[in-house]
Image (tube, rainbow, N blue to C red; front, top):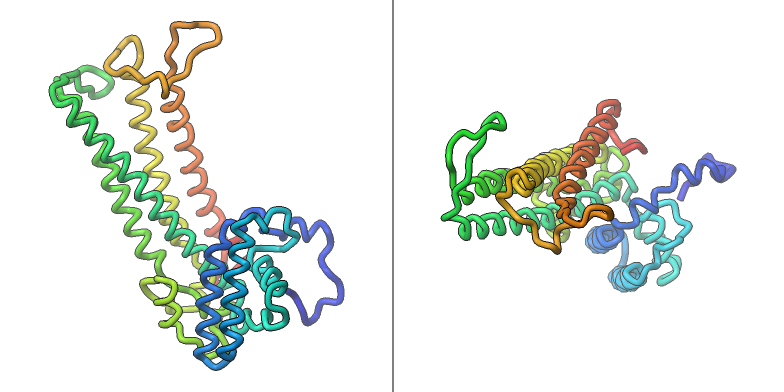
Length: 317
């Protein structure tokens, strides 16, 4: 992967520190998809022939099949990009070397990460929507139930159980709106930015955008290769969703207690005690409440990293 001035390879210690494949191997579907779009753009630009394009595309399809079967497990490669290229060489030979023409791993990983994040946003949105529907369904079932409403932890006014449930459903609506807003900013394509100042080949970035399903094209290559704001956007939205789920969990823990007794947890979502057989423990809500802290920690960790990084790609991105 490296050439030019280096006379020696990296030390074992550097190789171990520098190797990101155990983390970024999950990006292989996006890396293959972006590579296929890039091959087509190279063909349109006259960099590869139609025959080479067909050969590379077929080879990438076979690489995807191998990766789906677990080819990344135990692979020696530095990252997902070198993994895909090594497997492609095994499939098509020397023509695989043309795949990386005019492309840098800097714009490559930025593209892969955005594509992966778009898929993750859609999965999260579907899960939050399903939870919202479940709360609404429970609210409809509980229209007749009346319980105390609380402020400051003290009984205040009588309210319907449905009203309480919907008070936890509405934050989920806002969570989905935040994810949709983050998705819009994530759907900006950096591919074609090169290492920091664009590609040296006349690739059609509009063609790439349409092939990969992006909304827009990045305007500044130096910014695009070093931009992880979209990750922070999503992590903030997720952290706030976690806070909302934590509040829901905390309330249900209280309502399920013997002192309140407003709700009864199903056996399939409760745990017991090895010493006290009468217990019905709300572990699922306690775990949801606890995991919310990890989501907040991930968000703060990213901001802590981003605050000290100058413009352009850096390894700690």
